[in-house]
Length: 248
Image (tube, one colour):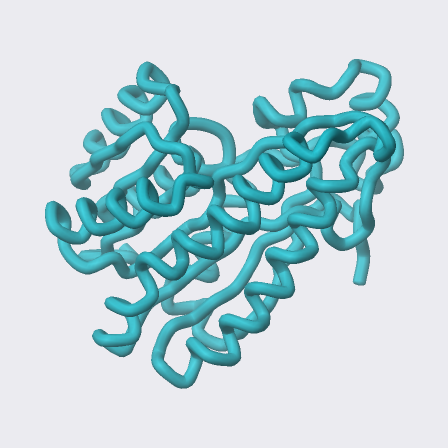
């Protein structure tokens, strides 16, 4: 029970990596609040699975690009559950197309969901963490922020920016007792990768040394490391479980 008594807020928690991480945290003793975007049925299922572990669960539909909605949700979680100990900043989306075909609105949306949403959700929980002298923020980036990708220029840019934001915040937060790190997953079996064409998907798998896509639970294990007592010496780090797609 490495997270016994902790309160965790997970964005994008109804499915995929967010769901797997919420369940991993609950298994280790944390109460879970998570948000999603109009995914009520899946969210209810995830909440029931959390409660089956004997933990409290709450969820709400919101757009993480809406800064006020994010702040209000974080405040509500703190009021109902108690001070937030862990933020797993995970919500994301993508629009795949050639660089020259992106519209300004599409660019703005991708940046808003990823970089703006993560930045201000972290800001929503940070002052209370500093006041208590403890806390953990984990931002989900992507291996595409490390290497780039065809038909994903705004997404790759946003994910690279998240890693830069993580390092910058770690410099400020660590002396105040708040640990800040990032995870840059490789290709994982989620709804996001399901939008790839079969040909692109197979080509990606063929290029991976491990010969397969990862499972959400494998990313959740990395999140648990960073959130728990074993992750205390990680500062501003980006861990990248990616099946060998990026080696550094």
